[in-house]
Amino acid sequence: MHKSGIVLAVFVILGTLGAIFMSSKAFAVRDAWMKQAQDNEAAIRKNDEEIAARKLTLRDKRNDYARTMFGWDREWMAPAARVEQNGNITLQVGTGQGVQPGQLLYVFAPNAEGTASVYIGDFKVDKANEQGCQAIPNSRRRPSDYKEAVLQNVRVRTMVPREYIAPLETVDQRLLDAELAIRSNKDELARQGRLMAQAEKLIATRMKELNGNEDLANEDIPEVNIKGLLSSIVSEEEVRNAALIEADRLMRLLKKTRDEFQAIRKENQKRVDSLPKVTAEQSASR
Image 1: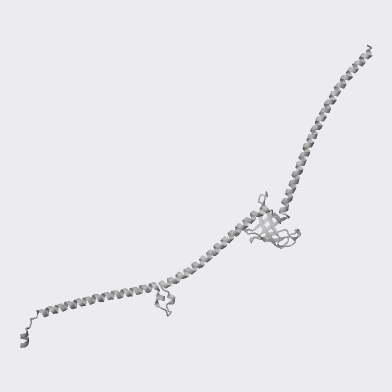
Image 2: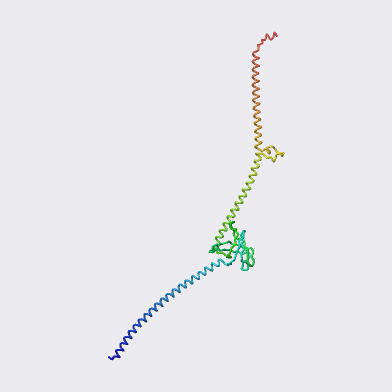
């Protein structure tokens, strides 16, 4: 074989080997890209599913937020508010923000730490102007709730969701029951006081009847009404006892007199019997 043929054969062999090597490399790269593409497709599908799930969650959250905000209705931020001793509140929210007289407002204020809100109470607008309003308590309060206070950055709402209103209505009903119970107890105490006063007057009258009434000393009435029943009974008992004692003394004196009379009579009889007896003949001779 000619040398050029040998060289050509060597190049052909080397080219074949190179082609086989490059083909294997190309297939490896293709397989790697195919695997990457499949992984990317799987990741894309997973991301699409997560995006869809998060979209559903976002939609649900937005619906919940809308329902929540519908329950809370409008909201105003007041830089400051002042609670008076009688429970009235002055707010820096007025007709310029849409507040109207007679409107019911729910007031919240930050706690001391500023981490949460504290419910101040519900108030009904009594007076309102462009810059502010004055409201009076709408629900019942305990006596300890009436305290003066200056509040900052209060939130004013026109509505509160039903799940929060129900406990407030329960508290208001309990306060009403307590108020009625206190009023009933006061009425009962007043009634008992009147009965006690009447009883004391009656007792005083009876005591005057028993012990006497000096205020009637100059009145032309029976003495028993002046001296009193007990004193009159005592006086009558004393008179009766004195009469009994006198009667007993007289009875004893009468008995003594009778005894003395009987004794004298017996003595006289003895003396008569001791005299000499006169016969009929002696008597005739005289």
